[in-house]
Length: 358
Figure 1 (cartoon, rainbow, N blue to C red):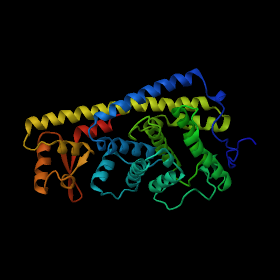
Figure 2: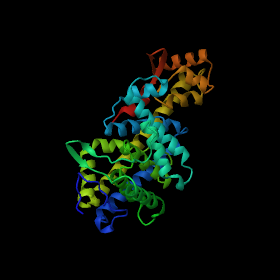
Figure 3: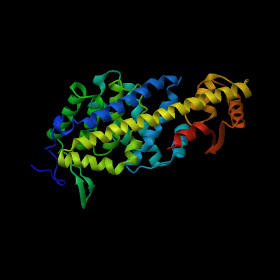
Figure 4: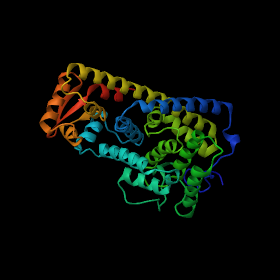
C-alpha cells in the first residue's frame, strides 16, 4: 500500500533497511570523521576532575535545545537560575529541567546494555512530560487538524511489533556500525511515535544513551539537539524523504554530520571550561589563598550559579564563612551576585559565557 500522510503508517518497514539504500562511499567517509571526533572528545573528558561540571552544564544545554525544537522556550539565564535556586513559576523552564532529570536518571540507571529497554524509554517519557500514561493506546496525528503531515502506526499489536523490533535491533544487531545504527534508530523511533507526547525529546535522550551504551562516549554530554535546531528544515526534510521514498543516505549523512560537528563543539566547550577552571584556581591561590580549596573551585564550576546553601550542603563552609568566600570571589571578578527571590545567587561569569556561546 502506498504511503499516505492521512492514514496510519502501519506498513512502516521493520529495521534494518537494505544496505543498497544507504551504503555509499560518502556515508563511510562521514562515518570516519564522526568516529574520529567522538573518540577525541571521549579521550578528553577525563581531564575534568569532577564530572558534575559537565553534567550540570552541558546536559542543561542539551535540555534547553532539545526542548526548543518542540517550541518549548526558556533562556540560559532563567534555566541556570532555576536549576540552582529551585525557584521558578515558568512552565517551560520546569519542563526543560525535567528533561535534564530524565536524561541523568536514565543514564545512572543504565548499568548494563539490556537496561536500554522499553521500560527505560517509558520512564524517560514520564519524567519529561510529567504524565502517568505509558505506550499510547490512541491514534495520534502529526501536524494540525487541517494539515496532517504524518500519521504514525496504529496503537495495539502493530505499534507493539514495531517497538519490539526497535529494541531487538538496538540490542542484537551487530553488523552495522553503531553510529549508522543510531541514525536509523532515531528515524524509526520518530516514525513509530510510541507516546502521545514528548517523542522527539525522548528519542534524542535515547540517542545519547545509545552512544554511552556502545562505549563511544562515557558521559551523556554530547548534545545533538543544537545541530538539529540549527538545521531544523533539513532535519524534517530528510525524515520525510525516508518515510516517503526510503531515501536513507541523506538522513544518515545528516546524523553523522550532527555527531561530528557536535563532538567538535562539545570538545571546544570542555577545553574552555577546563582552561577557565585552571585559571580560577591560579587566581584564587595567588590573590586569596586564605579561602582557597579545590572543593570551593569545583563547586562554583558545577553549575553557572552558586549560593551559600550549596557550600553548606557540600560541607565546604558554615553559612557565615560561605558568604565570605562567595563575596571574596565576587571581589576578584570571578562571580557576580544577583538577588533572586529571597536569596542571593552568584553567577560564574566565565562559565556562563562559555556555555552561552555559539
